[in-house]
Each structure stands twice: as C-alpha cells, then as structure tokens.
Length: 490
Ligand code: PLP
Image (tube, rainbow, N blue to C red; front, side):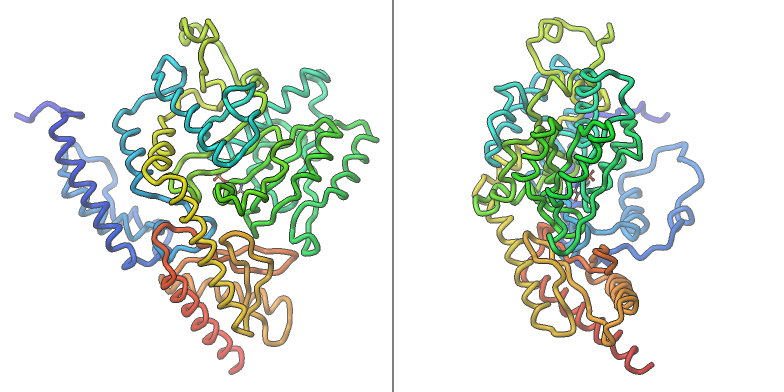
C-alpha cells in the first residue's frame, strides 16, 4: 500500500531542501558554462515533457534530472557574470536566505494580525533603507507617510497613480476624471502608461514629453511648464508628474529640483521612479542625483535590481499614506479584527492591489544585516568602476562611440557605420547585437534614442568581475570585426 502524502514532514524537508541547496550551489559553480541567453526555439519544452501530470509520485532525483536536461537549456542566466542586458536582477546569499525563510514560514501578511512581525519588520526595514538613502523624514513611518514593499516598480507607480487620482477626484468631483492629466517624458518606463490604462486616465490626457540629446534625454522643466499652461488654459487639471532617476534606456536623470518646483506650483502629485539607480544613492557621492526628493510625494526603488535582494522587492515610500489607504482600502466583515478596528496598526493590504502578501521584508533585512552598509556601498562602487572601465575600452576603439554620458553602471554605445549612413548604422548594430548574443558568451540588450539603434552594456550581476568585462569587450570587438569585414567584401 502507498504511504499517505506527508507534504511538510520536517525530516523529509531537511533531506530534500539540502539536496536542492546542493543543486543550486552546483548551478552557481557552473553558471559560466551555460549560454547566457537561452538558445532554445519557441515551443521547445512541449516536445520534452509529457502531456499530462503524473498519477503517481516521481522522485526529486528524477525531477532534478529533468531540470538539468530540459529546463536549464530554456533558462536565460540572469545571475551569470556575463549577463549585461536590461538592468541586473541581483541574487545573493543573504537575499536567498530571506527568500527561503519567507517560503518556509509561508505566511500571508495582509493585516497586522495575520503575522505582526511581517508588518512590523517591513515598517522598520523600510525606515532603515529610507535613512540610508537620506530620504526626507516625511517618508518615515513615524510621520504621516511611510514605506511599503510592492512586487515591482509597475505596481508602485500604479498605486501611486490611484492615490493621486482619488485625492484629486475627491476635491474636483468624480465626474472630472476626463480632466486629469499625467506628465512624464518619452523616456519614462512604460509602467506609467500601463498604470494610466488601468487607472482610467484618458489616453488623450497622457502627456509624454519629448526629450533629446540636448538634455541627455532628461525631461525639460521649461517644456513641462509650457504644456501644463496650455492644458490649464483649456480647463484640464494637471494631477501627476512622474520623474525618473536612471531611465531604462540610458540612465537619464530628470532635474528633480526644477521639476518639483513646477509640480508644487501647480499642486500636482510628484512621483520619482528610481527603480534602478536608487540603489546607487546609498553612496554619498551618488546621493545628489536624488536631491529634490524632499519635495516628492512618493519615491520608488527596486531592491531586486541592484541591491542584492532576490526578486521581488520594490520599495515605495509615500508622504501621505492616507491618500493611498483611501484609494485602496476595503472593509469586509471577514477581515475585521480588534487591532485594525482600533486603528492601532498598519494593515498593508490597504497599501497595495492584492490582498495577500509575502514576508518580503525578511530578504531586505537579511541583506542589510548580513552585508552591512559599507559592503553594499562598495558593491555599487565596484560595478560603476567596471562600467567606467568598459566605457574606456569603447572610447579607445575608433570603430565605436559612446552615445550618452555614463552616469551609473550602464554604458550606451554603438558601432559606427563605415559609410556614415543612419539606416545602415542601425542595421549594423542590430546585427552586432544578434551575433554577439547568439555566441552565448555574453548577453546585452539595446534601445533606440532619437531614432538611433544603441547597444546597452549594464554591469551589475553579483558575480561579474573585471575579467568578465574585458572578455565581453573582446567578444564585441571580434564580432564587430567579422561584420565589418563582410561589409567591406560586399
Ligand atoms: N522603472 C524603471 C526606471 C525601470 O528601469 C524599470 C525596469 O527596468 C521599471 C520601472 C519597471 O520595473 P518592474 O519590473 O519592477 O515593474
């Protein structure tokens, strides 16, 4: 007779989890042997797995063999030291420990009462991080504001937009939704557009202001002023300005103090998206990039990008938590409890879209405690130095150019077209991206700025060292030489 299922037997857990940790440790040991960008074709996995779930249990060993043989080929190795695409998504031992503990406890902390430690640790850890970033006291839990962990920057900007929208509508009337206008630059992450779509903002009221090389792709306060004046003159209501510190394409930094002045003058909600670059601002020398945050209504950074906190963990601070709670709270009978009713506690379910929430603060707490501030600062500085070295290598090769000034750990560059033709130059760089990524040796990504196709080299994976950067540059040079030779021969 088969044994009854014991899904959480402590001794079985010990044995299986040890094996899984060994498997993961071996993966990290051999991570450089995989092609960084998965080279499989769409639909590859259906051919390898059965059509239906097994009736009877299989062993962990069998499953791990399948992971090795069938799953890993379809994985793009974000933690590879040769990963330089998009922005990094850091894992670390500390983050992993937090993730493991969170999975182990597996609580659902929507209200304080469902696990007081989850709410209270989140409050404390976000206060720590706010102090580390030298955010204004208004963002601390001790005042009318506070911090909350969202899954992603997209959720952060969505809840902010909903809070700002409802704050305005409660003043000007619910029927005025068609009057609310959102402002951002054409470099702002598409997460804002999605938030507008979900939040019912009229598409014709989303102002995406053009940027160009003259401001290094930062939003111009003069242009913003001009557009706002036009909107006001036609009876529209400016309500949300979203600025970015470290844009996704090229790490552009919007001029926060000047933008804050415009937002304030027009009574708008001012949100700052520092999803990637926020981490760098724990270093005093990079903190000036968020000068002006004092005037912001909300500020967001992704600890899961460049802060050694395994995905997901996006920190959002808000000055007026009441606005968020008013937009997102419900009060069903089945969630009522003494602590909530007495207004003695924070119930984070009212600060986010879903009800359920994970114990994510454990990860951030582990990272801060097991590494300490000085190590974290060194970690950031090292990546920025490696990016600077890569930038030097690009500058030294006259066949290439650096396109925008490097600020943090991203280098935007391109191979110059021998005949100076824009379209041919774009094709050349597209081809270079494809050939480089299909070597499997490195993975980089691209963007388009002012119609020009540009390659992005983002340093920030936890295992990346100087030798990886040098080898990556060699791969780029070799593939560029091959491409240029075929052009010359044609
Ligand atoms: N904002 C910026 C500046 C980003 O670079 C990104 C992603 O790279 C996002 C927002 C979206 O991040 P998420 O995946 O956390 O929603």
